[in-house]
Image 1: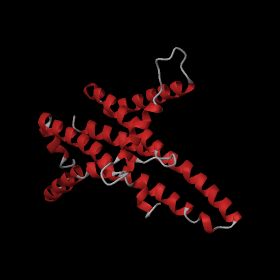
Image 2: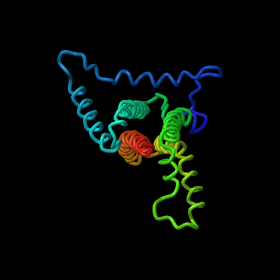
Image 3: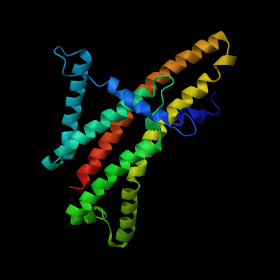
Image 4: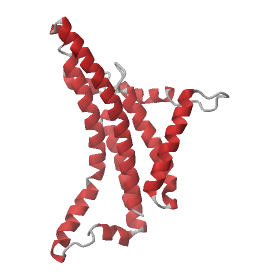
Length: 224
């Protein structure tokens, strides 16, 4: 029985276990087996999407030194995308809706970018704290603002992903909870609305994975 709306995001299956996190293992069922002799349409779709994203991330990374990061960014994109997609199935836990997961990914990336930038390109990182053309009187204030914006980047990345996944699932739960007391016409309208929301949630799951990957790529390109 669902005690409250947020119980659908509870990872604990009992007092001592959190078996709902094993839902992240289900994504391996959707990874195409490219070693088959005759590839399927899903493999062609996967390879075309991979090629499209790699070409786009190459433009964002600018330098050849950063091209190694494409492997990390592409793995991150498909991991978030498939986890968001798995959350659309009934009775499957949405692991990407938790800050525990999204913050761990964004914080590790942000820390690695910052450490590399300050250790290898310290002058470049200092120059980013004061935008070009800033008046002399505003320079101390701009240093504080830019420092704060750099610090909260990992938080905004994770909260953006989790909040969007939570909002859509809560909206669908709120609408479906009123279905018991509705008439036949209103029930049909509610089902149509739910179908539209499911399509919207599928698009949000793709968009959020793309936004997370693109912003991580831009943060990586900034430190070089």
